Length: 128
Figure 1: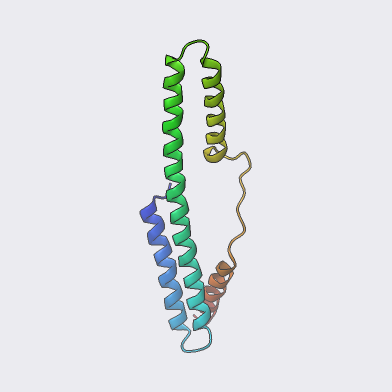
Figure 2 (figure 1 turned 90 degrees about the vertical axis):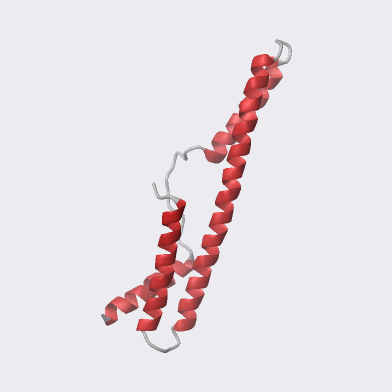
């Protein structure tokens, strides 16, 4: 499994490779495309980090709530247990839906700028 630091290094490596590729192609009208591609890639990377942090916080919060509901369930009287059990089941279902493994594994379509990355690198490879 790749950790966050490795992901950061990989994104930086791709960004630097695109810059070098653009410079290797020389002066021309390709540089705005290279810069735009890098900008879009870095923006998506920043957004992904924010979404990941939000998901991590939500996961921790839900885990704490489930643990609290379990403690309440153990301590509650028989009259109150069905309500707590229903709330606990609902919270677990939401948690599993949000953070569980998906039954179908598929890849999302790559962003449009990834086609630019491929084209830029292919162009550089052709010239080599």
